[in-house]
Length: 279
Ligand code: NAP
Image (cartoon, rainbow, N blue to C red; front, side, top):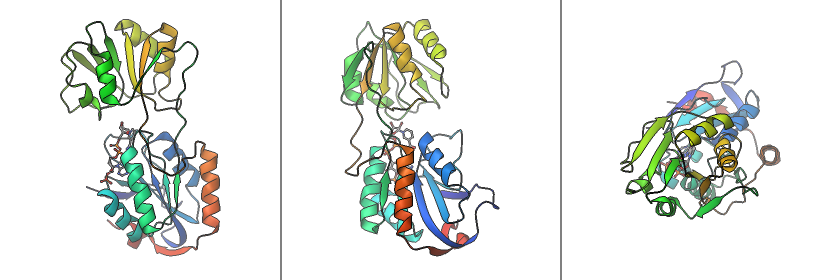
């Protein structure tokens, strides 16, 4: 189910006129920052798209649509019907399918694509990282009686750990997991960011031997990595998936710069907001 809402102050965004039309594929803090940066510009009509799997703590500035597009064809049709002129892919580093779809749909609709991917964390001298190729690999690495695992990977890939029956798991998620959980596990529901002290406290209190995590990069979820380092705990770092061929920018100022460069060469479109974003 898709929906599109107009969340910005109506005074800040024009109802009809000549605009450049931009789509941000979001779900990350950086996507919010890009939408904030572009908010209130009279020359732009910007829509942020969210997968809608979790209740976001903050809604993006500008127009927002929620839910999948229906694959590559659905996204291609959306780009055409919404007269999107530039797509900014600022999805999470592990949202590989969305990025692949964006690449193909942009090719089909002949819309330029700007890809942003935040830099990965790299191991520091005191870190004790074990590298897992994917979620299943991580599950096979830690499933033994001695392991007390802090599983902090979100809800979606938890099923890779369903069949672990030897290790004990503390699973942290924002919302209740809907999949079969490992036999010996406890779930805590909470939303970050978490401080270093909070992360150390939880790792000590639960006598954690391994932290299993995605390499999300960025500061928001880094405290658990630092806490594990400080306490000498092993971290199973799950490798990032391939996101497609488009060279991804790693700095937001590069995204803004690239956007301006593309905008300079695009014609304005006469758009009527009601027609363009309709129900
Ligand atoms: P995905 O596997 O790349 O996408 C699966 C499908 O979800 C896409 O094909 C698309 O459906 C829809 N989708 C994803 N992002 C969308 C967006 N911004 N707007 C509209 N539709 C979107 O990504 P995922 O399943 O969401 O997540 C994969 C991994 O990324 C997980 O580890 C998850 O924790 C992490 N992650 C994702 C997000 C996010 O917002 N997507 C945020 C934080 C973390 P259609 O094919 O129907 O278009």
